[in-house]
Length: 396
Image 1 (tube, rainbow, N blue to C red):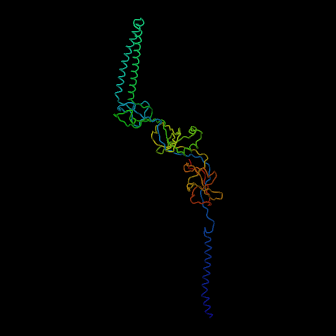
Image 2 (cartoon, rainbow, N blue to C red):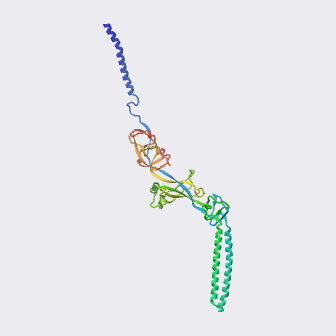
Image 3 (cartoon, rainbow, N blue to C red):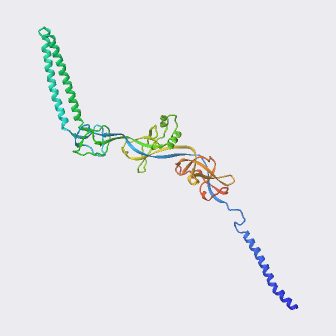
């Protein structure tokens, strides 16, 4: 019996020992897990670039599509009927005032001149004969040889002959004027447009197409439009009580050519249409640009760039903002280092890669520069201060 109990104790000993080791092992494993990184310890604070808002000066540029027209676009049309006899210019030629353009063959006008000249010769002979009759009659009347009636009759005949002579001279002048219309000259300095009629073409004043168009391009007009909202913004941003005062205070504008280059000569806005087009909802503007070398041509397309100066404005880089449900937000950093999502209002125009803030920010506020997509409200960050000259280095 004693031997049997001893065997039971010896068999139970390994079981107790195994349980003891399992308990100790579990306790040891729990201590190791508690000491693991991130398990029950303080959260790790991440670093973000942060900058302070400092007022900045900037220029906001807005481009408006424009069409260019010469200061004068004069259609050259014949005043007489005839055939194109000579063409002295070519399309695109630069012409001076008074320079010959076309010659029209119209023999009928030459004949009219000859007929009028012959009529004048006949009328002059009639005047001379009538004058002789007056000179012959007057002495006889003075001596009472013939009645005074004969003298008055001779004088009336002389007056009629003089009137016929004057009319003949007028007819000759008209004939010469019409003949002069067969030689067409340029009325202005400018550039010749297309020439649809060639030598031998029959032309008249009733033709739908002109012989050509001469564009005076010493100055060029750029026509562009602003919608109602843009027009209101323009009126608010430009100083002046009257339209003329606002035009006088409007800054010089720039012309952007069709190839994207900038025209070297600045222009000025001269006129604004007083009415808004009911079909387009826009008002027409006209800017004038000098064209000393003739680079600009009538009919070309370009864009008028209107600058708006911002002084001591609140600007933020576009990358520092994010959009949510049509609204724009930034992350402000408070004194404790926590971030807060803040809504801002911005202008429609941008200064390059920067938004102009009209509400929601002030000078001295600290804003997260980049990496806002990984942030949430009340998250604490480690601020890496950025100098203002680096933040606004791309500002023009």
